[in-house]
Image 1: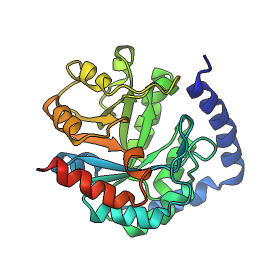
Image 2: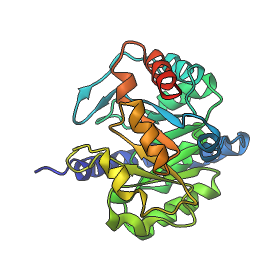
Image 3: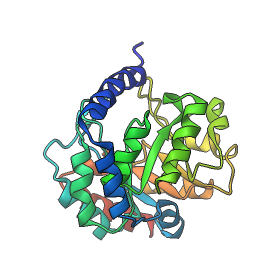
Length: 261
């Protein structure tokens, strides 16, 4: 069976080398110096009654196009207006149909934290993330050697970015370190894209309870969120469930109202 994650990472290496040839790191550093504002995603999730990280995602490798014509400005504004604690924006182009420009466009529209969701493998991506307005970045254990992941997490902190570490199995528990602000359990196997929400429940008892825990992918039922909260999770990353509708913001509103009944 083809390992989709390895295919994505191979493509990302090429894309990052192209980015490093065309982007000016000193210009990115100037933008970072000019904009010192930071919104804590960890604190926003901890304080939220819903803990919903609403995701802007146009497509996926397994489902194809989900919402090709979605306008990121409208969706971001509607997500905030309807109770999202934070926003996740997928910026990978070939596999998810997103770009850094989506995050740039969304940032002025909202005050809630933004997670840049991408396949981060190089420090240059962290500089870009901070410069375009991200508050947090995703580091995927399955995509990085342990030492490399910790180096990237330390650089992220130095730049003022929070780190959401994504794990999928027990063998990745060693990736949890002091540089990790939030621990995400991905219910989707990134190699096969098989999704099982039970993965979060299975790993919950093995995770440090002094960290903010996030369950990612495959969540479509408010009852599942309630059970995940009982298991110790405070963040719930949901994208496809909202993005597949004609009005993602309304989908979020309905979900939260049912959740809070």
